[in-house]
Image (cartoon, rainbow, N blue to C red; front, side):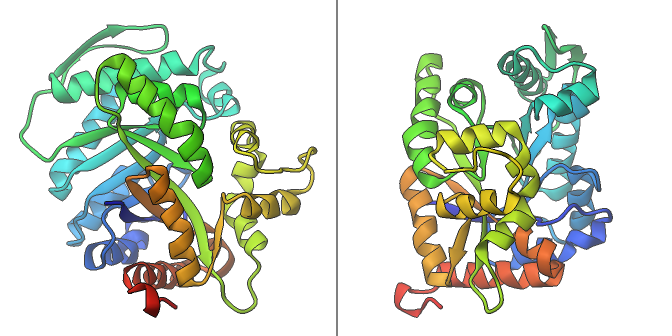
Length: 328
């Protein structure tokens, strides 16, 4: 059965800012609280503050950028968060864009796949074996992490295209996608995950889709909300390449962000409608093989504020749990 989770729809700078969203996750049908990586507050510290205030839920980091944290520190932070919250942690990583790699490292990874494999291997060895001894092309670690009983840490890999999906199938517990239409998941990502897992002789990882969406309300336009929440991603080459592969008819030239946002809505990368319509659209992700859907109302938060985003998430969760004949 597909689980529904909540995404913190802004870049928090203080731990108290995520408390309402942690409370919603704890007191509603939501399964897990997710936060992405930005330039505000570190997700691990934000979740720890929420736990200190009594809001202890399963957490997910999606997606932490590999250039910003050594894999030893990544393993230590993830395990510490699991011990702090008393709940499992899904720690997900990705190489980021080539531009980010260049800014952080001086040059981009010649092979993001090799870098991601090395990174997850070190983190997994530290968490599961208590030590790592790898001297790779991009990452090196010869260290120990003393074993401590506690909730499990799942390792995830951010996935947009088939090659990374195959790698996730081979090395990750979870594959995490962002802004990916359901049909693209079913036709491209899920087969690649299964192929990678089969080649490695292991079960396919869980699939988590972080899905941008909003309820239809008076005065709103779907494309405006899609642009407010995803404008940066619609300009990033690795996202536009994925969307074009998925059949989203983006403008040929990148200079029209409103047209790109409208294309994202038409192509199923941003969901919009009544509660019943969103439930039907999200059912397409369930049929595609998604195990966890993360509700992302960043567009609403950007356009109308955090309180509106919190109400939006509450109303969507209510609509998803209502009998079909009673959905708003």
